[in-house]
Image (cartoon, rainbow, N blue to C red; front, top):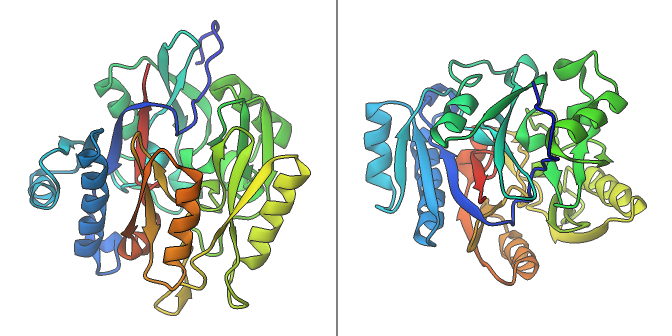
Length: 331
């Protein structure tokens, strides 16, 4: 139940953070034979943020998982053992809201495995566990929501996709107006930019953090198709058009183009970047467009070092660096 009182809002990712939680892969069956490389790529991500001077809390499952992580990460990374299934803490971790006086609370939403697709032990409880470990008072919200489905700009504007938030596999009884009311009540978002579909073959049903990211107040980055074979060209064009129609400034970033795994189109995206205090970590995939994507994102964050890290094995598990992490906003 949400407590009445001071209006609280979810701050944008570029605001100061106390630390970053990151999930470490542990289920071999979830990683298509590449769990070793996925662990190495997540470890490189955690180490890069920690070496920038920001606290990183890498969440590990058990003793063996912890031992593997410790061999891979920088000594600056803190390890915390928790019970969780998937590593996608963006979706299962707490969403932290903050009042004007800096007071923070955790919002805990229902989680049903991305519409009933992937239900694993611990994923419905890890958010509460992390909130408790952070000393946060927590409120249980009466609907299903994943953090990767939302992208806020700090002014009360939030972007999401119709494919995900209006999907009947989440909140079948809630209308668009109901969802908008809950976004305002629980997270302080009073305006919604409704985008259409997310990327092809995104098992989250089109999370917005793989499609479009706010990089400043009323300013959103959206991929630009690279070449006639880009499978998401129409999706990018639609997102840009909807944002512009809502009078949101659009900045285009080259997409990775066609990325396949086992003959299937993968939802590869530079938009799954992570904004930390001093660095921005961008997933790259070994395509000819990586350099252009990094350069475009670097222009958006002149005060931070932009670092590209290979994320093809992480993607094989169904997500990216942003999906695997959740920030703790500073008070």
